[in-house]
Length: 153
Image 1 (cartoon, rainbow, N blue to C red):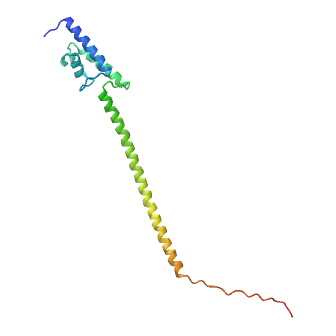
Image 2 (image 1 turned 60 degrees about the horizontal axis):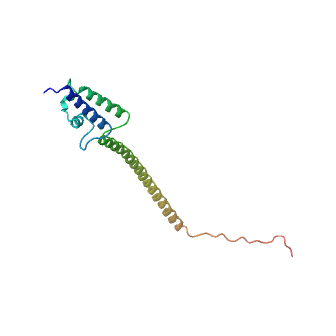
Image 3 (image 1 turned 135 degrees about the horizontal axis):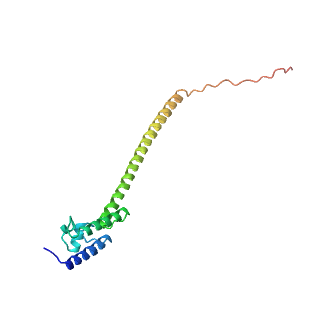
């Protein structure tokens, strides 16, 4: 079915208005910032955006503008922005988890070493006590008598 030039211009205006809304982030619930949603918002058949169809050039423009925004770090689709934010957060949390696991491993090793040292020191204390218990007799040497030499009376 052929459409008139006026209808085509009106459709193209709707496509451009829908394109601007989507690129500003005004994505309808359940939609995305893509050609399917663009066609739905403009009330145009999606197949008209492909090949040599009448709205192929607005599709190319839309995809170009969308890619430029993505390269600049702007994500017009709130759902994609949320996915990107969650992926970044997931990466950070995985790094923190790996760091925590490494710290736990280091502390576990330190605890094992400390317990081994304490056990060795305890064994040494017990051994020294046994040794000292066996030698409780202290030998006293006789006191030296001092005699005064050279006293003639």
